[in-house]
Length: 450
Image 1 (cartoon, rainbow, N blue to C red):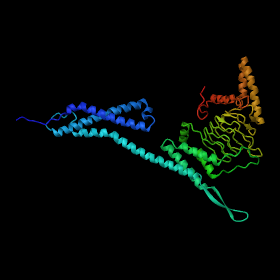
Image 2 (image 1 turned 120 degrees about the horizontal axis):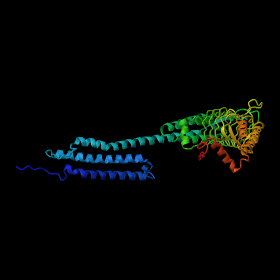
Image 3 (image 1 turned 90 degrees about the vertical axis):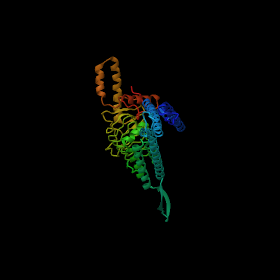
Image 4 (image 1 turned 45 degrees about the horizontal axis):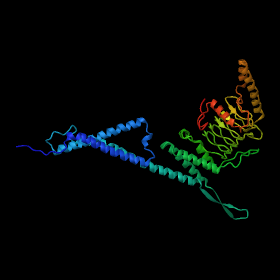
């Protein structure tokens, strides 16, 4: 008797190359779908921003995945052949559904990971929507007002609206929490937005009406609670929050704000834009104003103990009143850490002492100094000219002697013309550069080092 068997046109050992071709075709279709989806969502495919290493890893992963797809097809076909033809030994090296199931699981792993990513992205989008809602709600509360009934002299009462301080305080604290959460969870994407809101709140609700100095006797003002809290939230930003701002070259925009009587001590105000602000009676002790722009500011009666003033622009600032009428605590910058400041056209008639250790200052012909400081400046000017002559003559001993006499004098660098000359700005940049005060926040775009 002749044994007969049913033959399938494509046996397992021949199916190897065909399965490879099929796998490449399926992988090509999948790649086309991914490229189409990416091109429709982004202006350019996201992998254009990938590094060479990331592109190499992606290519290796694509090849491995295509190979797994081919192995899965071969294994599944071999397993089906075994069931239909138990007496045929041509099952291929992967025969059976066991290995096929394993390969199918490996093949499906990227899809499982992709599904998990999509779920995570959905949850993240929901969280971002919640943060946006929280910001919108807090902004609405910043404008909260309440109605007050005030008595009239002739009897009865009249209704007036006033800021609802309690609600506004809650809104400011909510914004601070949002900025902190954003810094910790999503790299600070909403932190700068919150700072912009708080700065705008201060600019609109504490606007400096004028820069006229308060005559003596002087009494320190007490700022409104919500305004002081907004300034406090800004000044106590963490180092991580400040690093985010520096990375984005973001500067606090606090121009034309009335900070009279505010407590800004220990505050972080690096690179802040604060020109035309009032600081009468403000506590600026131990605060960092490095690289800040304080042009045209009023600083009478301010506290500047251990205030960091590296690379600060105090051009046209006013410091012409002592801290009290008896002149017992006259205004001075001796307690400040002032390594490189510009006082072009500033009025410093209340400043009696700039200190003798490490301070470097640059002013101009139209800078107004007190009598004491003017004597220091005149002395530095005379000695500077004598040093130039001695240097031309090659008299090294005279040069050393003059340098010794000028040691600690803050007026060794001085712009001889008025501040409105274009070259005045270059003189300030040269001073900052010589002191290593380059880049952000001292200049934007940065000053190139020597």
